[in-house]
Image (cartoon, rainbow, N blue to C red):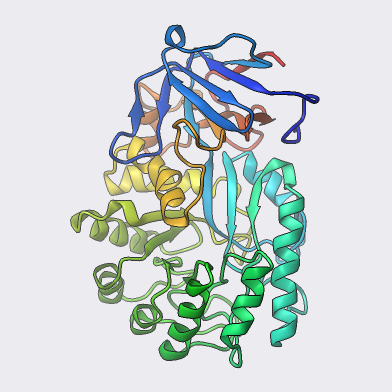
Length: 399
């Protein structure tokens, strides 16, 4: 089903996507672009616009979008990978491949905490973080970009430990609060060390997720000062409403809403951010695979739920799962514009669903159908085996 990125032989690659019905940009300020064609040079977007105005000659791959919607590849801001495409948490193989079938082309680790026998000593946790970063940098399950190597901080760590991991290529911290550090002052000190060395941080928010974890309330979240408020709607148990509002109003961090959380609290966070004029801080994740299992359609389900129940135009809801996350997470994907990574998902209205268009159908709470995925300018998947069947699917006519 999948072609590895870079497939197709040696030499320059040029991808032309023509006959696009709609282009979703990923940007809240202009969620729909004027155009019907995208040209990619290798792994990057080269041009976006009308086919007659673009250089489409000498393409090595041509995709006829067949009037479907071109969207940036979806980004899952919160996953817990372990090794390859296997999750011991659910004893399941192929969960990342399955998620690609939900339109997700990039995943961000919030900690490899499901590793059996996860080391909690400082030498061990550093080694595991470096291993995970290296392993997923060298191997893309089903072509999906998995940004991993996210150590869970423990008491006794010093700034030199963060400097060592950063020098080795580690750029993330796992959820603060999943390890022994659960107090604000210690968390803030370590988060500051991590930031000083270029590592982005997130924090567990809400009640315990599994036996052994603990409550992280608004006071600790605000004092720790992480870059992302992980699952502000709980994973699973959400904080009381006043604490969720307090967090939204009391920091400038990314506000992450997850599928593996409280849906009512998700709507509260969305509405609070919108009332503050801060919708750009809202990003989406699944928090899988966890107790709720593997969630291959989790991001699409969050987009549809927030649009339908949060009264958010569907084209803006898709931005939460693409451009917003890219901006908060400092990624080069998630937005369709020249220079960005050529990561796309082709969407169309699911067969026999309500609404006059794909966006109207999503706004009614329906999932769209995924017809194809592209990562770094290379086709990585065709018609999804997990979404409802799309009314139309793109066709690869060359390459």
